[in-house]
Image 1 (cartoon, rainbow, N blue to C red):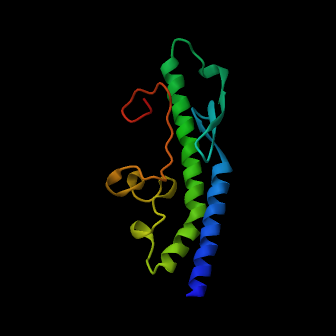
Image 2: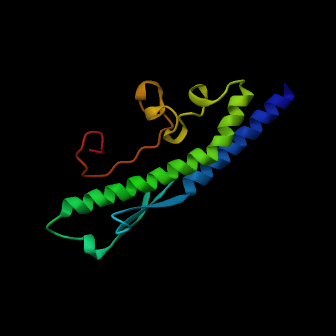
Length: 144
């Protein structure tokens, strides 16, 4: 029993360390062949936005907005990929510790938006789901 508790404590420390690393990580996404680049942190904060002057057309603001949204989503997808990669082994360890095979029954399956769609059963966002919003995006469910 003591070994089991020590193993669980080690996994908890690994998880906290991985979460901290991911929160501090940055990823850059791009759209329009690199004409728009967005950098976000693992916490979802947009820290940098680079626009090639050729995409700034006062007559076509919608295209620029779409490119910005696509670049931010691309950066978020990279953070998600890193989270899945970094937390995958910890996820497997927890499943093994609990006697499960991982996957949908895994207690960490919804962490950082991974696992079940929406992060919780039924597609509802779970308490640990990371979500971002883009101001002025009036599409349903897009931060308005």
